[in-house]
Length: 444
Image (cartoon, rainbow, N blue to C red; front, side):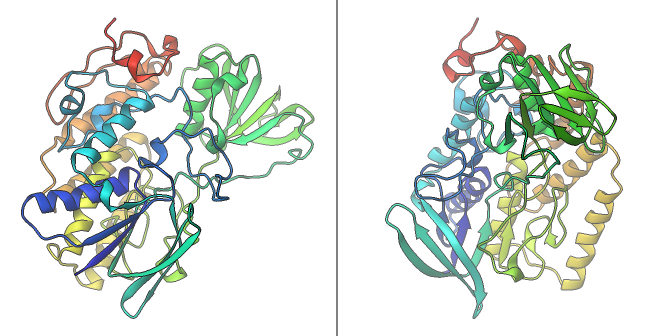
């Protein structure tokens, strides 16, 4: 029987486990599956952990999740086509839920599909090589300190790419008397109450961590961008300046001449696609972009069609895009999708990469990733979902952020699966200090 190894049981890993279970539900014989998960629980980044650095076994902590995190995009844009929010919660819920609510939703589908039986927890893959037409995978059970070698026919890397931080160096860091941390290790905005902080970056994490610190009482928040400012209408006490040049004692000196006394530097400088366990011939090497090269349909490794990657793109679309990728990967593994010639694969990859390189703004990027996801969706039996409505929602969401970065989460969207219109949350986001599921689910 065909054997499939999956690395990771976060949203991407759970997507492919559900894809196989969906095929089995329809009467298909599915391969033997083993999913390796280094954490003691499933859900990937959506697991909150107080830990940073290393766990109790000396393994690096993958979690980048922090307290008080609320979804920064409408939940309607990430809804599973086969498991709606209505089905899970048995009532309509607002469009921007906190972490615990989304975590509950992700696990709800996984539990319903009964896929936990495939997962080996506390098990880290230490080496993967392709030899004699098989993947030889070495894994370590961290609790038992036991090493195992197994052969597999297919390998699916579903680890995501937001767990290994890129940490730059700036002059003066060694003598800076305050706190320096990467967003990966940020856990609680309360730590920065009444403090002057500098956030370096212009990505979603910089935006959200800066807003969190402002919301929970930072004295001032200065955001240093490298190339292009986010350009939102920041509230009083927040500002954007050109990137950090150096630190001089407690003073941050920026390239535009701006100077700011600061108690803490939070580096939102991005993450690395980092796969130290993979041999070089299998290793994806890319920055954070909407179409990583060498992946056919963004999924199948160009040089070895038995190797798949899920969720390696920069993302507007998330859970349902991961599903479309997972259903596609499943059908390649099960022989339902035939791989084209090497020449046609090269041509297809180049077409998408060239389109991606010509993109100029977020609206074009939304269109690009929507077209990519629709293309994948057509290739499998992933259930019906209205990606055109999701495209519209993403564009409306972008406009809401431009109108007011502090209030965009107070808007309501409609489901692309059920049509349900979300209620407005009982408390505006800027005033909602309690992010518990219990409080979120209450009616006012």
